[in-house]
Amino acid sequence: MAIGGSLLFLVSAQPALQVLRDRSVRSWLGAGAAGVIVYPLAFYSSLDLAGVAIGTVVSLGSAPIFAALIEFLTDGSTVTRSWGACAALALAGMVLLILDRSGGVDGGEGTGPGVLLGLLAGVSYALYTDASRRVLTAGHGSRATMGALFGLGVLGLAPVLVATGALLLQSSNTIGLISYLAIGPMFVAYLFFGAGLRTVAGSTATLITLVEPVIATMLAVAVVGERPGIAGWIGLVVILTAVTALVASASSSRHRS
Image 1 (cartoon, rainbow, N blue to C red):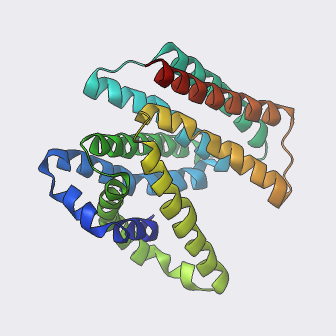
Image 2: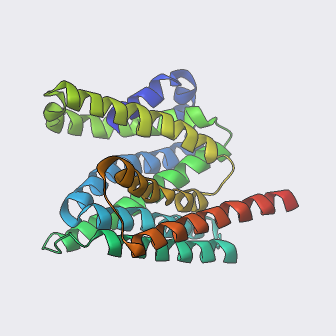
């Protein structure tokens, strides 16, 4: 996150600085940067304590709910019936997926703290997603917004990287992995994420990103050789159905308007 955030800032340094000078969005930039800093620390700690399946489901599955709550508290926005139905369907699919994939996870003492950290990660994810959208609606470009938000986040994440990142430089393999993570899932992905936030609400964006554990499971099948059970496959189909229905509903609404 620190390296990818630095790249996001560097490719849009001048417009990002203009965003940082805009006093009307500073409070949202601060809130979003706090989310950027807390999210990876809470998310990966959740995976470590509760296991990958539980940590991922709690973190990503709770984010759309927290995003909708943030929009309600700040704007008074309420979710539509179609969003609620898609969210419920997607969460049901996530439950099936976790039940299928957590068979080898030992529910030890770390599960409870791991779940709490996953909820904190969900709040943080929702917070920086909503903050990004608000800066965008203030008239700033998506690349400048991502650069400003993650540039601020780097200030908090860089000390963590310096203190704990020595292991990443021990071999060419780890250097290659961290380079991929910084350039692909962080830098390129968040450029697309910022562009997407120009046309969808934060609650919708976080719900759509529930496709992430679906892709992760498919990669686990193709690359690692894992084999989900029946519940897992049903969960994947349910999540994809929910996300597809949400996107179709949003597209239909835009056409009618």
